[in-house]
Length: 600
Image 1 (cartoon, rainbow, N blue to C red):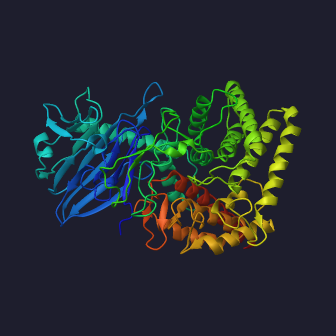
Image 2 (cartoon, helix red, strand yellow):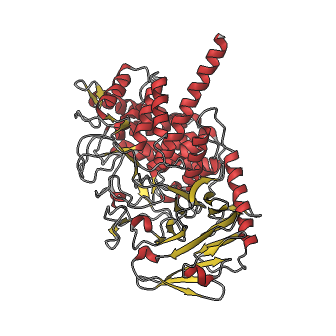
Image 3 (cartoon, rainbow, N blue to C red):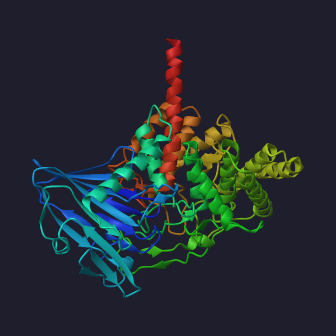
């Protein structure tokens, strides 16, 4: 079964996907949201790839070097064995900045014997919109396109350039290398230099993950997810991407295909909260500065999403010459959702600001900026919380009074009040408490359905929605409250199918969803755990983990029947929820173990 069997490598500037057979099939340079230079994942014939072709006698296995984002693909045929160590260089420099060029290094490690392969080097620049010409030069191979606009890609190798370009059979008797670069290199590229980059990058990732706490249970899954979330952070501005890809469909053959190479305030804030809990406060500080830079005016409303370089207009268009993943078109670039109104983003952002002020040291200047942002958010929420919006699931036509949006408006005021108390800003207490109480009373009056015995997707409807499971997590209701327990059970009855959850079952702009949104199942497992159904939650979590790909990575969606991964990949949403659920379940298991020990 095709299961999005890719590994991701990156350096917080861009990222690449490499198949379980060692084929480089998605890469955008010089940055995450640049046009692709390899896009076989979106069109097997036109997209372009960089492959290592071996005969049928070889077995191929793939894994990450432990606790790093260095991907190792091992090719074995009896005694003939070699490995490809794929990575994008990233390591610290003397001035405390990072060396992170728009490069991929494919370091070929000779293990034993005389293994052979044929390279297929077939770059297709600018989303394969025109002709890419590959030319041999004295020091490198250069690929050029000029049809849409000029672009180029450089290849350096210890192999003969002619043999690589022409796909000749190559025999490996010692370590070799390929360096792909968006830029012409100044220094001579050698095996020794490639190996030095490999070791320095290895040390960088080992040092980064060493700051992450170790957990008694699910530590490996937490580690891999944390490393993946780090890869989806953009060093230059502090933006956090929703995913590394565009247009991988939620369902094969349908049109729910979107470009996720942008920074959603909601998604990024959720990621930042989790990564901060793991001890990586620098990611949170960079993201909050990203937000502060975007809203210089005190009454300016936040967009739901921005470009990773702070672009505010993200016009959407399609690449009709590409067939799409498994012929699921269209392939979209840009995302029209940037124009939507989603009132939940303020609460999720305020939750992160509150966490930052409570948990981490902050300068007086930065604290003043965050306090100004807090007051600005309160003004916006006060003026707009009673209005309809598009909701967390970004309905493209209908606006409603979505429960999740109202709940997060409450969170915005609640966290603002907490911050005011920390800063001893007493004159805001009474005003803000009135708003907080009004929103909460409104939710409990209009979002509860007597017929369903549950909080519903929106006011005065009976449709259920997995997002309301977060009511307890955000503190608007207690896990022991009978209404919350009934809501969890109602959602299980109506939205749970084959061990996975629908986001909702009412038809949206594109009909009834036919795949499970992965984060919703994690939310449900968390909810079961919170209401005391620990054993059921653990069993369901272990089953969900088994649906990851061979490297423990998740996309946005899972097919209910086949359990294949669908949607953009890897998905920040899925991995942040995995971490949160794993930590909660790990803590429960630890507490139960302590209890058993005390009883003995």
